[in-house]
Image 1 (cartoon, each protein chain N blue to C red):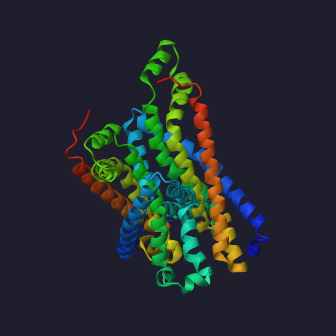
Image 2 (cartoon, each protein chain N blue to C red):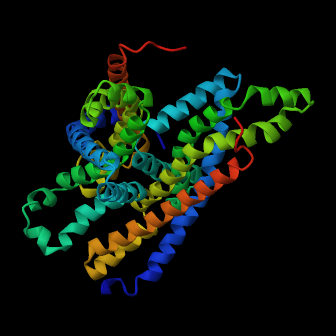
Image 3 (cartoon, chains in turn orange, cyan):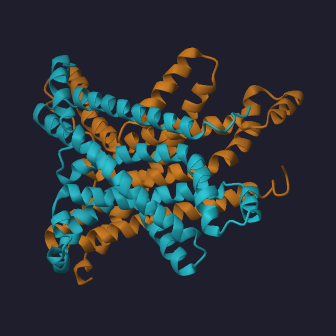
Length: 231
Length: 231
């Protein structure tokens, strides 16, 4: 344990980066998931097919491959675009933070698409008819009826998506993000104690997953406060 | 930036050379993981706290940390201890493949045991009562009633886990194993053509995923041949 002295602050800042990646990719993931679900439920054939391709592609490929593709792919694409504007530019550096965050958000968003789609289909048709009868517009029905009913149905699987999101952040260290895995690698070259250093990383991630699980349980309770005894 | 088709034609056979390693990782750790999962399941449903609690802690730890961290702890971390370097397990733990299989087994075992538990909990109470009425012992009830029905109930979720195991095998490339992803990363490092290589590899993985889905679909139909399809 002595080897850990002097590394705690590095791990702390690494954990802060994990938290940042998590929050940024979470909001993006919800956006992609909702867009995907709405496309799948829309009447437009094109939107349905696009969303279908999106879910098949991103659910069928390994996360590491997607992160590598986003990182290296965006680097050469942005370089090519930059060279059109200014031929002097040799190479555009893409920050691993954003390449990784967007990659895991798109990836987990494909799972969220299916969850949200199922939850929207689970909304009681009677509630929507009631909203219509009250003269609510489509947008009002969406905000006041569909969303409040669907999020309770979506929450349990959505909690699992959040857990996979937090665990996927570890993969971003592969493209050089200075999060906890990266800190551990540095600490190992100095101290020569790989087991201790990686166990700390494991403990940090376990802490994150525990917090997410507890929060999801709390929110689930909150969501059920008015439905207890109903059904 | 250009999209080089000849490069794809050239590199796909090179990547497919790694399919044997990917398959080996998938099948060996899938089978070992299933055995581990059954042990964990029996511990959890044994009703004895000294079996149930360790199993629960195990599942909590392995589901709460990223698989990448688990792979690194086993591959880089364990050799920190002299006891392990001198033990009989060293020939396995010295090889990256052995470490990858061990990590994938331990990881998938935790997930699959929860899936199996879901199946066991889904078996109807009435069937168990019928078993008791026929005078079956609890072991007989488990073998002749719970196990066959739980298998059928757990199969769809299990097939998803096999697919995520396939995707996790790609992480073996981070510990120098030349599986399909490992080979692809080497090719990209040489050619710097991430789009061509990674996208064609993604297609290979998708075909793989599709094959697994079809296989499990067939098994599901076979196991469900006596059950009538209900509306």
